Image (spheres, rainbow, N blue to C red):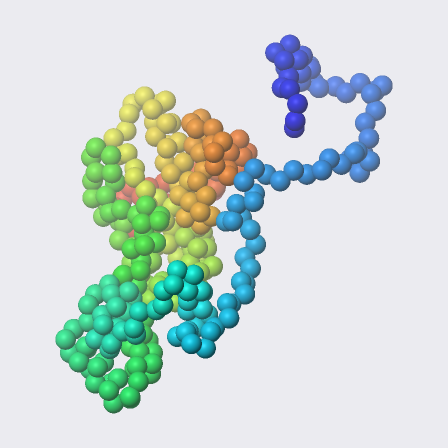
Amino acid sequence: ADGEPLSAAEQAAVKAWILAGAAWPDAVKTLPASLLPQAEAKPAKGADHWAFQPVEQPAVPQRPADRRVTSPIDAFLDRRLAEQGLSFNPEADPRTLIRRVSFDLIGLPPTPEEVAAFEQACGQAGEIDGPYRELVDRLLASPRYGERWARHWLDVVRFAESDGFEMNRARTNAWPYRDWVIESLNDDLPYDQFLRAQLIGDALAADAATGFIVGGPVDRVKSPDPVLTANQRADELHDMASTTGAAFLGLSSPASGMASGRSGPITRTSCNERPPRCGNSWQGRSGGWPNCSRSAD
């Protein structure tokens, strides 16, 4: 609420009232919520940022007849190029095209035999579009496709095959989650199912997917000091929660007891108001898989 904060004396009076049982005087009447004056809601700071606006379908720019525009994406690119007095580069020849799409989709160059076969197919067809569609379908069906694109998601979720910290031991039970991500991409798993499995995979017969929760660094050097041990556990839980927010929402969240989070969309107070959802998740200790083990609750 707006206004000055309570003074120390006022805070002490409220505290004493609460400790005394917070009895409400009968002589003081209150109105039901429906009759209270409604203050005009103020938009949250930063709510006008483009990332928080509803998704809309933009109008496709008109396609001039004298410009080489074959798709809506080309129309947007062409408009920007025209503003700078530029135009599209010439269309790629078959040899260049197969190299570009191969690196894009599977991260590997085509073999000389594949280049020759594609050039021959384009020559026999008298055009590039048909052979190109077949080439793209073949590359998307390749196991290399999942291997090439999984690495981007694994970077987002801070996946590693070692524990980090000073010991940095090899994490021998990390690979099932890595392979699950690769297989999910190769199997065209719908995005909503892809996310759901990583959050509650243990309830969906997708145990390997829960490796997402505990994919971050873990300090295996434990301290006999219970305070330090509690701090280590708090760091693990914060890593799980903050990675979930960053990966699925694109929002950073402050650590409890650390930065205030005033510059971010989620404040420390807001974080503390939400109960933890990963408090019963632990790094697997047996070296088997899945990487995430949970208590019975």
